[in-house]
Image 1: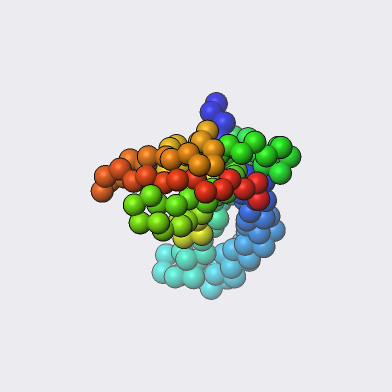
Image 2: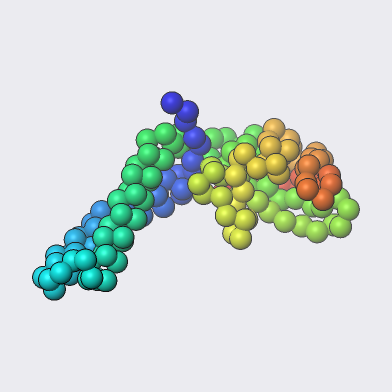
Length: 158
């Protein structure tokens, strides 16, 4: 079975969601199904069908999260001494060599990645180009629009 890296924050977020699903959402859905059953004919009962659909989604998500947690390798970047190298869990400050635009990315597991909040997957082209590099190094990222060069300005353990 393949193991997947995950940050401590990513694990906590999944465990919090799992608890919400099991302790809050699941009982609410069961109550909604019971209430809808009391209304009689289930074939034409929209509330019943909506609640059953919610139940299916909830149970599917519970299984999905439990599966992800069972194959996760939790990596606590704070427990590692800073090496100055870009590794899983570090936040990397980059400068686009061509445009001088600055950006920072945190390298996280696939399920945690969210470009809108500057978290990129360890398997993304940018992360793959950065892993193992140090401050001052230039990484070439193969992008759909052509190669982009980034200089590593800082590597943070946060």
